[in-house]
Image: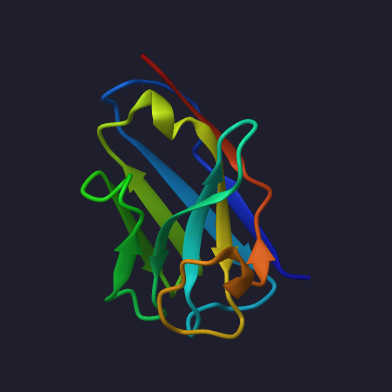
Length: 125
């Protein structure tokens, strides 16, 4: 059974930094794209960041570019999201996602096949 488990979400002050982690089990994703999405309360899930299979290519939503960094450790089957200069508008449930079909960066939710349960990030002003 494939599982993605996120961790690291918490209540933060604006301007702070936080790292989210996602651990995959049940299969390896070392040849596949992975990503992060988020869903603010009452809104649609939105793309945040994605990384290709090797980790040498990443792509970000404009709203987080320059503040967030996605990385992966294929040996550990994990993907992380380093979030700096947090803003109240970053408040959301953050989801880790993995593809079983694609190797390159992916920005659409439909391109991912596995999802975590989410971790809450709340940024207070």
